[in-house]
Length: 315
Ligand code: A3P
Image: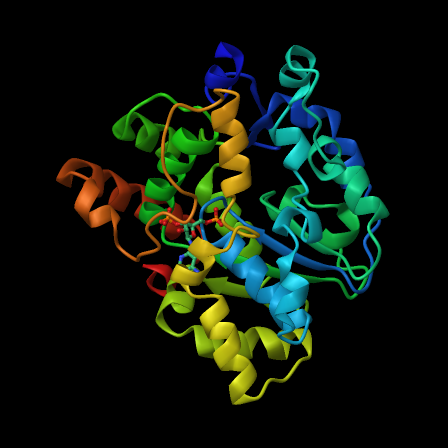
């Protein structure tokens, strides 16, 4: 399966300056023209910024802390818009006729178009590539965007690409790609700033991974307000427990272990590890050498002096 192991480094295109898998070109128009519904709830993010955590929180809040509803596999109840464009399984399926994938993998856009309301959708697309109706805020559809400090995002993305995408390079090489904006869904700052510019919209809520780590209780209340829900202390305690790192790490509905098992079975990855990996703020300090730290600082300054962004909020 060399094709798959190499896929991370090859077969990418730029669409409006955003790095995307080549296969995305088969879905771009359908995504742009998607019909948005007034009760849609979207969770958008740059990869590795706490998307899964935010999805699970949003889902549980919208379902009034009824955890029974959260037992279904997350990508099935909260589909990933770019699932199909990201993972072209056609070669794998033709080589292994016994494998079948569900529709949310094979045609995520069609799956979402046909999904009964209310829909919950995950997307890593930058704001400028979202469906046009959503960008124009034509309905009451809501977007929750989660951001994370760039350095921890980069570390997490490096491990993710080794574990899930067959990336074979080293950490410093990956940081180069990240800083150059040449990782999938990059450049990083365009992504964050594109959503930040929407922060005054009543239908956009911007959260950070760091705030969630420091005070999840407040973030649950803030998100509940945004979604028009209220919770008593007992319900919040139940949510805090369900959303803790330890409990999400054990939870097969959200920890992507079923996917990692398939990847291993078909030798699509050579790396061992788990999706719920470390879950900390500031892990980069243990991994980045002083030269890399300087490079990140310079890069951040360059990007943040050009356009306003309160770097301290996610530093
Ligand atoms: P690390 O790789 O730093 O551990 P995404 O869902 O956007 O891919 O983000 C994955 C990152 O969020 C991983 O970061 C993962 O461990 C972390 N994460 C997921 N659930 C979490 C939780 N309940 N608490 C803290 N971190 C969590």
